Length: 218
Image (cartoon, rainbow, N blue to C red; front, side):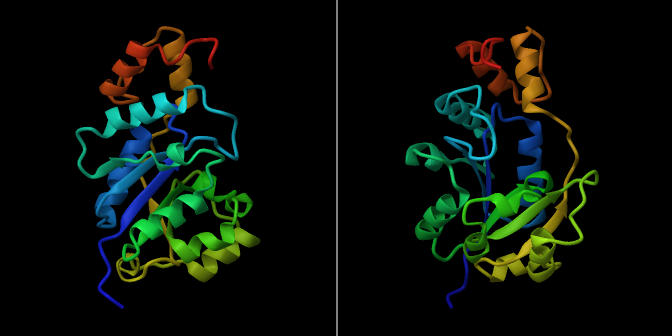
């Protein structure tokens, strides 16, 4: 096998709006795992939650504002361009075709990973990518069941694994616990309160300029 390229991270979500919790997690994992970049990918149609309050176009523009001055992060619009429900397996296969020699590291919060068995074609995801579980102490992995078996069989403790394999590993990584809620941010903005320091100033300026959130939308 040819020498692999430096791994990239993939962080998907609604980003409604993107906030400091998302960004801090992406930057921490970029540095800790020696990732080349972290692609931040807003979904078009979330599958496991209600539709976002902001349009896909606004959410994409807010991500662009958030990462404009952070060279380690990439605003990636592939799910919005693809149309239809946003299944992560489709996104990973698209990235794999584009980057056949690059390890892909799917970043998932531990709360989301607890529902991993309900994801579309979840069994195929580890054939295409590694999974990085962003761990927070208030959540615990189950001791039995599908998730427990998956972690038992695929967990790696040496971070170099993701540098030398295209896919197939699960890493648990503790992150700084910034308990920031996009729902609360939307409510604060709709009520005329200042959400500064919860999200980048550039994102807040975009929200104000375009009137993205109001009481009727949240």
